[in-house]
Amino acid sequence: MSEETALGGLRVLDLSESVAGQFCSRLLADYGASVILVEPPSGSAIRALPPFRIKAGEIVDSLLFWHLNTDKRSITLDWHQPSGHRILGMLARQADILITDRSLDREAFRAINPRLITCLVSDFGETGPRADWQGSELIHQALGGTMFTTGELGREPLYGMGHRTQYATGVTAYITILAALHARDSETLDAGPTRRGQDVEASVAEAVAAMGQAFATQYQYNGTYFQRERYPNVLRLIHCRDGWAVVFANERWGAICAAFKREELATDPRFSTLVERQKHWREAVALLQESAQHLSVDEVVQEAQKNKAVISKVMNLPDVWEDEHLRVRGFWERVKTPHADRVVLGPVFRMSETPRQPLRPAPGLGQDNSEILGALGITSDEIEQLRAVGIV
Image 1 (tube, rainbow, N blue to C red):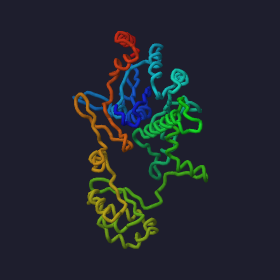
Image 2: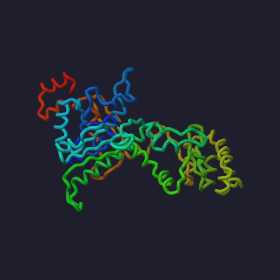
Image 3: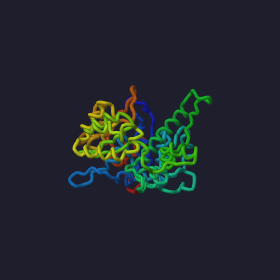
Image 4: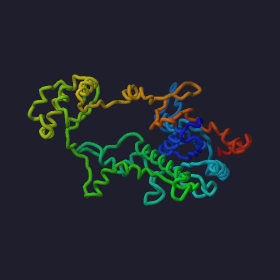
Protein backbone atom coordinates (compact mmCIF):
# COMPACT_ATOMS: atom_id res chain seq x y z
CA MET A 1 0.00 0.00 0.00
CA SER A 2 1.38 3.43 -0.92
CA GLU A 3 2.62 5.59 1.93
CA GLU A 4 0.82 8.50 0.29
CA THR A 5 -2.64 7.25 1.12
CA ALA A 6 -4.66 9.23 3.65
CA LEU A 7 -5.37 6.25 5.93
CA GLY A 8 -2.30 4.14 5.25
CA GLY A 9 -1.16 2.15 8.27
CA LEU A 10 -4.63 1.72 9.74
CA ARG A 11 -5.75 -1.88 10.28
CA VAL A 12 -9.45 -2.68 10.15
CA LEU A 13 -11.47 -5.78 10.95
CA ASP A 14 -14.89 -5.81 9.30
CA LEU A 15 -17.23 -8.36 10.89
CA SER A 16 -20.34 -6.79 9.42
CA GLU A 17 -22.94 -8.50 7.23
CA SER A 18 -24.76 -5.31 6.22
CA VAL A 19 -24.48 -2.88 3.32
CA ALA A 20 -23.91 -0.08 5.84
CA GLY A 21 -21.03 -1.80 7.61
CA GLN A 22 -19.30 -3.02 4.47
CA PHE A 23 -19.68 0.37 2.75
CA CYS A 24 -18.09 2.03 5.79
CA SER A 25 -15.05 -0.25 5.60
CA ARG A 26 -14.96 0.13 1.80
CA LEU A 27 -14.46 3.89 2.31
CA LEU A 28 -11.66 3.19 4.78
CA ALA A 29 -10.04 0.79 2.29
CA ASP A 30 -10.42 3.29 -0.54
CA TYR A 31 -8.07 5.71 1.20
CA GLY A 32 -5.41 3.30 2.31
CA ALA A 33 -6.57 1.35 5.36
CA SER A 34 -5.79 -2.37 5.38
CA VAL A 35 -9.23 -4.00 5.73
CA ILE A 36 -9.82 -7.66 6.52
CA LEU A 37 -13.38 -8.82 5.88
CA VAL A 38 -14.10 -11.53 8.45
CA GLU A 39 -16.75 -13.78 6.89
CA PRO A 40 -18.51 -16.85 8.28
CA PRO A 41 -17.32 -20.07 6.59
CA SER A 42 -20.48 -20.01 4.47
CA GLY A 43 -19.65 -16.51 3.25
CA SER A 44 -21.02 -13.04 3.90
CA ALA A 45 -24.77 -12.69 3.43
CA ILE A 46 -24.04 -9.88 0.95
CA ARG A 47 -22.57 -12.43 -1.47
CA ALA A 48 -26.10 -13.79 -1.96
CA LEU A 49 -27.72 -10.43 -2.74
CA PRO A 50 -28.50 -9.23 -6.30
CA PRO A 51 -27.71 -7.92 -8.78
CA PHE A 52 -25.52 -10.76 -9.97
CA ARG A 53 -22.90 -11.18 -12.66
CA ILE A 54 -23.99 -14.12 -14.80
CA LYS A 55 -21.80 -16.05 -17.21
CA ALA A 56 -22.99 -18.98 -19.32
CA GLY A 57 -26.24 -18.97 -17.38
CA GLU A 58 -24.51 -19.35 -14.02
CA ILE A 59 -24.20 -16.80 -11.21
CA VAL A 60 -20.54 -15.80 -10.92
CA ASP A 61 -20.73 -13.29 -8.11
CA SER A 62 -22.79 -10.53 -6.53
CA LEU A 63 -22.18 -7.11 -8.04
CA LEU A 64 -23.27 -5.56 -4.74
CA PHE A 65 -20.60 -7.55 -2.87
CA TRP A 66 -18.06 -6.57 -5.50
CA HIS A 67 -18.90 -2.88 -5.09
CA LEU A 68 -18.78 -2.96 -1.30
CA ASN A 69 -15.59 -4.98 -0.92
CA THR A 70 -13.13 -3.77 -3.50
CA ASP A 71 -9.63 -3.43 -2.03
CA LYS A 72 -10.26 -5.68 0.98
CA ARG A 73 -8.91 -9.07 1.99
CA SER A 74 -11.14 -11.92 3.16
CA ILE A 75 -10.78 -14.60 5.79
CA THR A 76 -13.39 -17.07 6.97
CA LEU A 77 -13.85 -17.48 10.70
CA ASP A 78 -16.64 -18.71 12.94
CA TRP A 79 -15.79 -16.39 15.80
CA HIS A 80 -18.74 -17.64 17.85
CA GLN A 81 -16.78 -20.84 18.52
CA PRO A 82 -14.10 -20.72 21.27
CA SER A 83 -11.15 -21.33 18.96
CA GLY A 84 -12.53 -18.86 16.42
CA HIS A 85 -13.08 -16.28 19.12
CA ARG A 86 -9.48 -16.74 20.25
CA ILE A 87 -8.24 -16.06 16.71
CA LEU A 88 -10.47 -12.99 16.46
CA GLY A 89 -8.90 -11.73 19.67
CA MET A 90 -5.45 -12.18 18.14
CA LEU A 91 -6.51 -10.16 15.12
CA ALA A 92 -8.13 -7.47 17.30
CA ARG A 93 -4.91 -7.10 19.26
CA GLN A 94 -3.24 -5.82 16.07
CA ALA A 95 -6.16 -3.73 14.77
CA ASP A 96 -7.05 -0.05 15.02
CA ILE A 97 -10.74 -0.43 14.13
CA LEU A 98 -13.30 -3.22 14.51
CA ILE A 99 -16.64 -2.86 12.70
CA THR A 100 -19.59 -5.05 13.58
CA ASP A 101 -23.34 -5.03 13.06
CA ARG A 102 -24.03 -7.74 15.65
CA SER A 103 -23.85 -7.82 19.39
CA LEU A 104 -20.47 -8.68 20.88
CA ASP A 105 -18.53 -7.74 23.99
CA ARG A 106 -16.75 -4.70 22.61
CA GLU A 107 -15.36 -3.78 26.01
CA ALA A 108 -13.60 -7.13 26.18
CA PHE A 109 -11.90 -6.47 22.86
CA ARG A 110 -10.73 -3.07 24.03
CA ALA A 111 -9.35 -4.77 27.16
CA ILE A 112 -7.20 -6.81 24.78
CA ASN A 113 -6.27 -3.68 22.80
CA PRO A 114 -6.93 -0.37 24.60
CA ARG A 115 -6.27 1.60 21.39
CA LEU A 116 -8.99 -0.28 19.50
CA ILE A 117 -11.95 1.68 18.17
CA THR A 118 -15.04 -0.49 17.87
CA CYS A 119 -17.97 0.66 15.74
CA LEU A 120 -21.41 -0.91 15.96
CA VAL A 121 -23.37 -0.32 12.75
CA SER A 122 -26.85 -1.56 13.58
CA ASP A 123 -30.48 -1.16 12.66
CA PHE A 124 -31.69 0.55 15.84
CA GLY A 125 -28.70 0.90 18.19
CA GLU A 126 -27.91 -0.86 21.44
CA THR A 127 -30.61 0.78 23.57
CA GLY A 128 -34.27 1.72 23.27
CA PRO A 129 -37.49 -0.25 22.71
CA ARG A 130 -36.38 -1.38 19.23
CA ALA A 131 -32.83 -2.36 20.14
CA ASP A 132 -33.58 -6.03 19.33
CA TRP A 133 -35.46 -5.31 16.11
CA GLN A 134 -34.14 -6.07 12.64
CA GLY A 135 -35.14 -3.77 9.83
CA SER A 136 -35.10 -3.83 6.04
CA GLU A 137 -34.72 -0.84 3.75
CA LEU A 138 -38.51 -0.69 3.45
CA ILE A 139 -38.97 -0.71 7.23
CA HIS A 140 -36.38 1.99 7.82
CA GLN A 141 -37.87 4.31 5.22
CA ALA A 142 -41.30 3.75 6.78
CA LEU A 143 -40.23 4.30 10.41
CA GLY A 144 -37.86 7.16 9.60
CA GLY A 145 -40.53 9.38 8.05
CA THR A 146 -39.02 9.66 4.57
CA MET A 147 -41.66 7.42 2.99
CA PHE A 148 -44.48 9.56 4.36
CA THR A 149 -43.08 12.69 2.72
CA THR A 150 -42.40 11.05 -0.67
CA GLY A 151 -44.95 10.55 -3.40
CA GLU A 152 -47.81 12.32 -5.15
CA LEU A 153 -50.86 14.06 -3.77
CA GLY A 154 -53.68 11.60 -3.18
CA ARG A 155 -51.41 8.57 -3.59
CA GLU A 156 -49.85 6.16 -1.10
CA PRO A 157 -46.45 6.95 0.46
CA LEU A 158 -43.63 6.11 -1.94
CA TYR A 159 -40.76 3.71 -1.26
CA GLY A 160 -37.38 4.82 -2.60
CA MET A 161 -35.57 1.91 -4.23
CA GLY A 162 -32.01 0.91 -3.44
CA HIS A 163 -30.05 0.82 -0.20
CA ARG A 164 -30.17 4.55 0.46
CA THR A 165 -30.59 4.38 4.24
CA GLN A 166 -27.79 1.80 4.44
CA TYR A 167 -25.39 3.96 2.45
CA ALA A 168 -26.26 7.00 4.58
CA THR A 169 -25.48 4.96 7.69
CA GLY A 170 -22.22 3.72 6.20
CA VAL A 171 -21.08 7.28 5.62
CA THR A 172 -22.17 8.21 9.15
CA ALA A 173 -20.13 5.34 10.59
CA TYR A 174 -17.12 6.32 8.48
CA ILE A 175 -17.19 9.90 9.76
CA THR A 176 -17.70 8.72 13.34
CA ILE A 177 -14.69 6.41 13.12
CA LEU A 178 -12.49 9.20 11.76
CA ALA A 179 -13.60 11.43 14.64
CA ALA A 180 -12.74 8.68 17.13
CA LEU A 181 -9.33 8.26 15.51
CA HIS A 182 -8.72 11.99 15.87
CA ALA A 183 -9.75 11.87 19.52
CA ARG A 184 -7.42 8.92 20.11
CA ASP A 185 -4.36 10.33 18.39
CA SER A 186 -4.65 14.12 18.56
CA GLU A 187 -2.08 16.03 20.56
CA THR A 188 -3.96 19.31 20.27
CA LEU A 189 -6.91 18.46 22.50
CA ASP A 190 -7.01 20.15 25.91
CA ALA A 191 -6.54 16.84 27.67
CA GLY A 192 -3.70 15.83 25.42
CA PRO A 193 -3.68 12.61 23.39
CA THR A 194 -5.94 9.97 24.88
CA ARG A 195 -4.07 7.16 23.12
CA ARG A 196 -7.13 5.04 23.91
CA GLY A 197 -9.89 3.84 21.66
CA GLN A 198 -13.59 3.96 22.37
CA ASP A 199 -16.87 2.33 21.41
CA VAL A 200 -18.86 4.25 18.79
CA GLU A 201 -22.06 3.43 16.98
CA ALA A 202 -24.15 4.46 14.01
CA SER A 203 -27.73 3.26 13.63
CA VAL A 204 -29.81 3.19 10.48
CA ALA A 205 -32.83 4.49 12.38
CA GLU A 206 -31.01 7.63 13.46
CA ALA A 207 -29.27 8.16 10.13
CA VAL A 208 -32.56 8.07 8.22
CA ALA A 209 -34.25 10.34 10.78
CA ALA A 210 -31.40 12.82 10.31
CA MET A 211 -32.01 12.75 6.54
CA GLY A 212 -35.39 14.39 7.25
CA GLN A 213 -33.88 17.13 9.40
CA ALA A 214 -35.78 19.96 7.68
CA PHE A 215 -39.13 18.26 8.22
CA ALA A 216 -38.35 17.31 11.83
CA THR A 217 -37.19 20.83 12.65
CA GLN A 218 -40.36 22.30 11.17
CA TYR A 219 -42.49 20.06 13.37
CA GLN A 220 -40.45 20.87 16.47
CA TYR A 221 -40.65 24.59 15.74
CA ASN A 222 -44.34 25.11 15.05
CA GLY A 223 -46.12 21.74 15.30
CA THR A 224 -46.77 21.49 11.55
CA TYR A 225 -45.30 18.84 9.30
CA PHE A 226 -44.74 18.27 5.63
CA GLN A 227 -47.26 16.09 3.84
CA ARG A 228 -47.50 14.97 0.27
CA GLU A 229 -49.27 17.69 -1.61
CA ARG A 230 -49.30 19.47 -4.91
CA TYR A 231 -45.98 21.27 -5.18
CA PRO A 232 -46.80 24.94 -4.50
CA ASN A 233 -44.66 26.19 -7.34
CA VAL A 234 -44.17 25.79 -11.07
CA LEU A 235 -42.27 22.51 -11.18
CA ARG A 236 -43.09 19.57 -13.41
CA LEU A 237 -41.79 16.45 -15.09
CA ILE A 238 -42.62 16.57 -18.79
CA HIS A 239 -42.33 13.56 -21.07
CA CYS A 240 -40.52 14.21 -24.33
CA ARG A 241 -40.28 11.92 -27.35
CA ASP A 242 -37.45 9.86 -25.88
CA GLY A 243 -37.30 10.66 -22.19
CA TRP A 244 -38.21 12.96 -19.33
CA ALA A 245 -37.26 16.56 -18.58
CA VAL A 246 -37.77 18.31 -15.27
CA VAL A 247 -38.87 21.91 -15.66
CA PHE A 248 -38.80 24.68 -13.06
CA ALA A 249 -40.55 27.72 -14.47
CA ASN A 250 -40.03 30.19 -11.64
CA GLU A 251 -37.91 32.38 -13.93
CA ARG A 252 -37.03 32.70 -17.63
CA TRP A 253 -40.44 31.62 -18.77
CA GLY A 254 -39.80 32.87 -22.28
CA ALA A 255 -36.72 30.68 -22.63
CA ILE A 256 -38.71 27.65 -21.44
CA CYS A 257 -41.44 28.34 -23.98
CA ALA A 258 -38.82 28.63 -26.74
CA ALA A 259 -37.20 25.34 -25.71
CA PHE A 260 -40.54 23.58 -26.23
CA LYS A 261 -41.26 25.51 -29.48
CA ARG A 262 -44.19 27.34 -27.88
CA GLU A 263 -42.98 30.94 -28.04
CA GLU A 264 -46.53 32.26 -28.08
CA LEU A 265 -47.04 31.12 -24.48
CA ALA A 266 -44.45 33.63 -23.26
CA THR A 267 -46.92 36.50 -23.70
CA ASP A 268 -50.10 34.60 -22.91
CA PRO A 269 -51.67 36.56 -20.01
CA ARG A 270 -52.43 33.29 -18.18
CA PHE A 271 -48.71 32.60 -17.84
CA SER A 272 -46.87 35.91 -18.27
CA THR A 273 -46.21 36.44 -14.55
CA LEU A 274 -45.22 33.97 -11.86
CA VAL A 275 -48.45 34.52 -9.97
CA GLU A 276 -50.53 33.82 -13.06
CA ARG A 277 -48.42 30.77 -13.98
CA GLN A 278 -49.05 29.35 -10.52
CA LYS A 279 -52.80 29.82 -10.98
CA HIS A 280 -52.83 28.24 -14.44
CA TRP A 281 -49.89 25.85 -14.17
CA ARG A 282 -51.84 22.75 -15.20
CA GLU A 283 -52.90 24.47 -18.41
CA ALA A 284 -49.32 25.55 -19.12
CA VAL A 285 -48.01 22.04 -18.58
CA ALA A 286 -50.63 20.57 -20.90
CA LEU A 287 -49.62 22.95 -23.67
CA LEU A 288 -45.90 22.29 -23.20
CA GLN A 289 -46.60 18.56 -23.17
CA GLU A 290 -48.31 18.78 -26.58
CA SER A 291 -45.08 19.97 -28.14
CA ALA A 292 -42.75 17.86 -25.97
CA GLN A 293 -44.01 14.58 -27.45
CA HIS A 294 -42.44 15.62 -30.77
CA LEU A 295 -39.10 16.80 -29.33
CA SER A 296 -36.12 14.91 -27.96
CA VAL A 297 -35.22 15.63 -24.38
CA ASP A 298 -31.65 16.54 -25.38
CA GLU A 299 -32.73 19.23 -27.83
CA VAL A 300 -35.12 20.71 -25.26
CA VAL A 301 -32.40 20.87 -22.62
CA GLN A 302 -29.77 22.27 -24.99
CA GLU A 303 -32.09 25.01 -26.19
CA ALA A 304 -33.13 25.87 -22.63
CA GLN A 305 -29.58 26.08 -21.36
CA LYS A 306 -28.60 28.56 -24.04
CA ASN A 307 -30.77 31.06 -22.19
CA LYS A 308 -30.12 29.67 -18.69
CA ALA A 309 -33.59 28.26 -18.19
CA VAL A 310 -33.90 25.67 -15.44
CA ILE A 311 -34.54 22.43 -17.34
CA SER A 312 -32.66 19.17 -16.87
CA LYS A 313 -32.77 15.74 -18.39
CA VAL A 314 -33.89 12.93 -16.08
CA MET A 315 -31.15 10.42 -16.83
CA ASN A 316 -31.57 6.67 -16.85
CA LEU A 317 -28.67 4.36 -15.95
CA PRO A 318 -27.29 4.06 -19.52
CA ASP A 319 -27.27 7.87 -19.62
CA VAL A 320 -25.31 8.02 -16.37
CA TRP A 321 -22.85 5.42 -17.66
CA GLU A 322 -22.24 7.45 -20.84
CA ASP A 323 -22.30 10.85 -19.15
CA GLU A 324 -19.44 12.97 -20.45
CA HIS A 325 -19.05 14.84 -17.16
CA LEU A 326 -18.41 11.66 -15.17
CA ARG A 327 -16.14 10.33 -17.90
CA VAL A 328 -13.99 13.47 -18.00
CA ARG A 329 -13.65 13.41 -14.21
CA GLY A 330 -12.56 9.78 -14.32
CA PHE A 331 -15.42 8.53 -12.16
CA TRP A 332 -15.46 5.08 -13.72
CA GLU A 333 -12.30 3.26 -12.74
CA ARG A 334 -10.97 -0.20 -13.49
CA VAL A 335 -9.46 -2.85 -11.25
CA LYS A 336 -7.40 -5.71 -12.64
CA THR A 337 -8.60 -9.25 -11.96
CA PRO A 338 -7.03 -12.57 -13.01
CA HIS A 339 -9.45 -12.77 -15.92
CA ALA A 340 -10.13 -9.20 -17.07
CA ASP A 341 -10.37 -5.64 -15.85
CA ARG A 342 -13.61 -4.78 -14.05
CA VAL A 343 -15.20 -1.39 -13.59
CA VAL A 344 -15.64 0.13 -10.14
CA LEU A 345 -17.44 3.30 -9.18
CA GLY A 346 -15.13 6.25 -8.66
CA PRO A 347 -14.35 8.10 -5.44
CA VAL A 348 -17.12 9.41 -3.22
CA PHE A 349 -14.86 12.38 -2.45
CA ARG A 350 -11.50 13.55 -3.76
CA MET A 351 -8.21 14.49 -2.09
CA SER A 352 -5.43 16.28 -3.96
CA GLU A 353 -2.41 14.80 -2.16
CA THR A 354 -3.73 11.43 -0.99
CA PRO A 355 -6.25 10.27 -3.59
CA ARG A 356 -8.16 7.05 -3.54
CA GLN A 357 -6.10 4.20 -4.90
CA PRO A 358 -8.11 1.07 -5.72
CA LEU A 359 -5.53 -1.69 -5.98
CA ARG A 360 -7.25 -5.04 -5.68
CA PRO A 361 -10.56 -6.62 -6.68
CA ALA A 362 -13.14 -7.75 -4.18
CA PRO A 363 -11.84 -10.93 -2.53
CA GLY A 364 -12.92 -14.49 -3.04
CA LEU A 365 -14.33 -16.19 0.02
CA GLY A 366 -11.50 -16.82 2.47
CA GLN A 367 -8.84 -16.25 -0.16
CA ASP A 368 -6.47 -14.68 2.39
CA ASN A 369 -6.82 -17.30 5.14
CA SER A 370 -3.32 -18.70 4.77
CA GLU A 371 -1.60 -15.32 4.62
CA ILE A 372 -3.45 -13.64 7.49
CA LEU A 373 -3.73 -16.63 9.83
CA GLY A 374 -0.17 -17.64 9.05
CA ALA A 375 1.00 -14.18 10.12
CA LEU A 376 -0.56 -14.93 13.52
CA GLY A 377 1.64 -17.99 13.85
CA ILE A 378 -1.06 -20.51 12.93
CA THR A 379 0.48 -23.31 10.87
CA SER A 380 -0.90 -24.75 7.65
CA ASP A 381 -1.78 -27.98 9.45
CA GLU A 382 -3.67 -26.04 12.12
CA ILE A 383 -5.53 -24.09 9.44
CA GLU A 384 -6.56 -27.37 7.80
CA GLN A 385 -7.76 -28.69 11.16
CA LEU A 386 -9.79 -25.52 11.70
CA ARG A 387 -11.26 -25.89 8.23
CA ALA A 388 -12.18 -29.50 8.87
CA VAL A 389 -14.29 -28.57 11.91
CA GLY A 390 -15.91 -25.54 10.20
CA ILE A 391 -14.07 -22.80 12.10
CA VAL A 392 -12.55 -21.30 8.92
